[in-house]
Structure formats: C-alpha cells, structure tokens
Image (cartoon, rainbow, N blue to C red):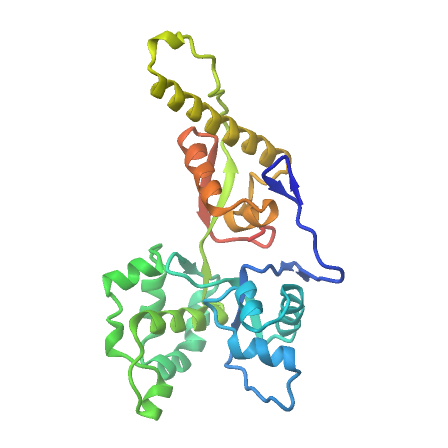
Length: 288
C-alpha cells in the first residue's frame, strides 16, 4: 500500500512469521547451511525438499521461493524452521558487491576449522580469511586474482576426478562455508542522518528573463528533484529509518522504494551532507 506516492507500508500475509528470537528473516536474506543437506524425497516434506534443492547462498529467499514454486511467506516459515533446527543461518546473500570482516574470536574459530577447511578447499583458512577481510568487494578480489583460484579445486572434485571450478564459483563456495561457520561476517551499509541540516530550496533571486527556455526547464527539473528528495528525507526521518540502525536493504524493504530512486536519494543526501552511509559490522540491534 503506497502512502504519499512513494513510501509503502508492507502488508504481511496472515500467520507469516518474520522473527526468530532476535533475528528477522526477510525475503532478501538467504540460507547458509553449515553442512550440505542430505535430500530424501521420501522422508522430507515436499515444500521443504523443493527449498533444499534450489537454495544456494547467491539466491535470496524471494528468488528461492520463485524457483521452488512456493509463496514467499511459506518459504520464510520453512527457513525459520531450518534455522531453528541449527542446520543453517540467515544472512544477506553473496554477491560481487559483498564485503566481509573477521567475526569475533576469529583466531579460535580458525584453529578449530583449519583442518576441515584445508581438506575441503585445498587452501589454508588463514590465507583465505586474510584476503577476504581486506574490505574489498568479492568482485575486486576476483579481478585482482590474488587467490589464484584456478590452481585449486575442492576435495570432492579431487575424489570425483572432475573439472576444476571456475574462479567465482570457488570463491563463493569458500565464502559461504566460512560465513556458515561464522568465521567471517558481512560488512553492511547503514544510512544515518547527518548532524547538520541545510535548506537547499532557497528562493532564486535571479529573474527568469536571464535564462533561456531550456535553462529554465533544467532549473525547474532540478528543483523538483530536490523537493522530491527532501520530502523523502523528511519522511524517512519521521519513520526513524535514518537512525543508523537500518541497512540500505532494510530501508528499501520497509518503504518499497526502488533501487534507482533510492540510489539517487543517497547521491543527493551524501552530496548535500544530509545523510551519511556508514559501512560496519552489524550488531544484534540492527536491522539488516
């Protein structure tokens, strides 16, 4: 339901559960399985079996629901059960824009996981975590070819004697394994209102006679864009979504603003010092 033409109020299906303890499960999240699920068509309920067949960390729950021919609420409900069982955790999906940092107690975790990781990926966990937590996006890491992934293949491929994985698939598999075992955690972009506020809609002292028709049209369009962004800024403030506790994805989900318009708002907001984008490791009180 859209309010004031651009900010929407999400209406959830009856019985849809988006909360699991302090964790909120949303359609743009995905499942990170701690171990590869063992599929049994006879013993596994059909809806759950559909999800397990298509769920990968590069697909959101919304995409998984579409591919599994299930409703999004049903997919979220089943995902909550999977997470509650301890078989998986939910987090933002892996993409080329993803960035990661070390989780707390990472040295202790790596000591416990080192042998299993090396057996699985033929790669040291210390080197992998060091490269993945430099603040670069996965896309930049792939372009740098720092991991030299084409030299390595997984343990299962050695056993099967099959081909080596391509670089991005190998990297994503490694990230998914480390994330599911909580050795690394996402760096998330949060939006916060800046402390200073300036009025950018000052009356223009110049006469319209000083401008050509095309210049007047550009000025009018520019003012309309500023008014639109300023209106959105005030509305997000009113909704308390610029407190620094909401990620870009969370704000877009709550308001149903499309990515193009929100990116334009961020460009305007950061350029005019009204908002700041802060990249950090999320806490339990954040909505990501």
